[in-house]
Length: 323
Image 1 (cartoon, one colour):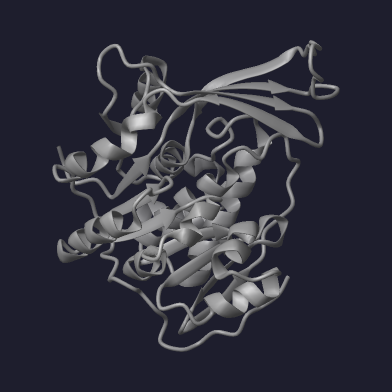
Image 2 (cartoon, rainbow, N blue to C red; image 1 turned 180 degrees about the vertical axis):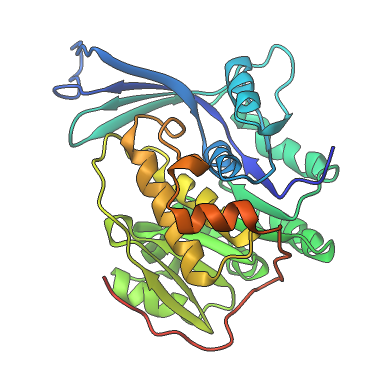
């Protein structure tokens, strides 16, 4: 098997999404809808499919059921499936009204997935590895990230919202070992240990690694000791925001691995994340090359894969441009 551009690592779910509910059910109630989607989700899956649709060769290390495995194969994403025969796959049910959502999740294979990842990663190779799960031991994963760096493989991580990471004294060291860290607005505040976004962004501007903050309708920004760049996004008719942040990650990494500049990476991430919300679930709204604006499509089709140096930085500090 040829070396993939992007290897994603993390949990997978078979998502059952009930859309357009008039309200969330109270105890003992049943609420009905005529709109329902069954799909595959999880950050590692969505980011890999998003990047694959933009022309990258992608592989995901996860534990997935047969339905999810077939969907990933149709998307052109190869899979290292760590689910053993007879083990249940994870299922997540989402109840969605026009303004709110509730979830119920059966963990299945994901209860033991993390313990199987280190051995699996010893046999994997890629230009870039993106992690999308909660690490129970930051010290353990710091060592794995540094080992990948020794192999000249760049890394990124989307930790999601996990307050317990603040109690792991090695979490700051894990952050510093990574080349790129993806955060949304709430996570940026949480992990900076601040009370508002402006104060958190001030912390991340001095980070020794590349911090990518997803700002929803306000776009995204790239922060670090030599970087302070904001890219606005365009409005879209939103059907479902499930997986939009993971879609952004896939678009950003597709740009990065094709040698795009800083602003173009942010703008491509914004574009992919925004278009992902036009359909329910994390996969069905993801754009293909034919959906991408001509400037990006030409670059993706024409550019040869470019090596990404660790801790890639611009040569000068760029002023933040607020939307």
